[in-house]
Length: 213
Ligand code: 0O2
Image 1 (cartoon, rainbow, N blue to C red):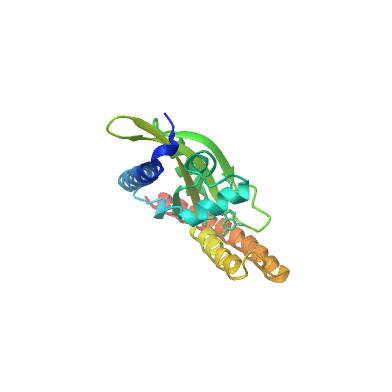
Image 2 (image 1 turned 90 degrees about the horizontal axis):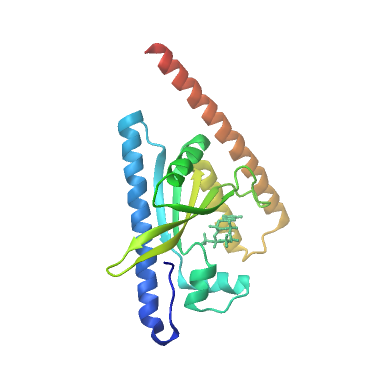
């Protein structure tokens, strides 16, 4: 069952909808913490550096609905805004991103709706990240609600780039000068090269360690 609302009790519905999205975030966060701890036990290594969770603000929801050409109603928000519940996973290495994505996708109660691989195909801005749109069941007292969660997985370097680019975009209110846009694209390429270098360095360290055992 997916979330449905009726017009006559919108306030109650808003409260319930927010409770459901918050619960989905908590559940996903717990799942990821367990996975990270298990990875530490089995492989003596944490693929996840840290996790950030956020519930999209009502202002951002309204803005996104407007951008997509929908009226600001609770049902439209549920149907058309896919990142109300957002989880961002920050990893050390690009290879960790795909490892974590595979593990999440293999969980029996997680249904992957679609993925956007902005690492294989960066956005024209230079944005790199791996996005998964999943449904997870939230168990309420009288029903189970399949709830949308957007999971963004990226390296520390990609996250650094995205937060700076976001600040610049905000500062220039979407009208960033072309020279700055070009510099950001150049930085994105440098970050990609840095991630590749750090990964090969780590692989080399692992080979040396295994050779010494
Ligand atoms: P915020 O403030 O992070 O919430 P869809 O969600 O699939 O219906 P959408 O929103 O066009 O459609 O998807 P897209 O382009 O994959 O973007 C989703 C989110 O990815 C954005 O959410 C950002 O968090 C991040 N993102 C995408 N492109 C960029 C970019 O060029 N730079 C930065 N810094 N982040 C980006 P919101 O709602 O835009 O913002």
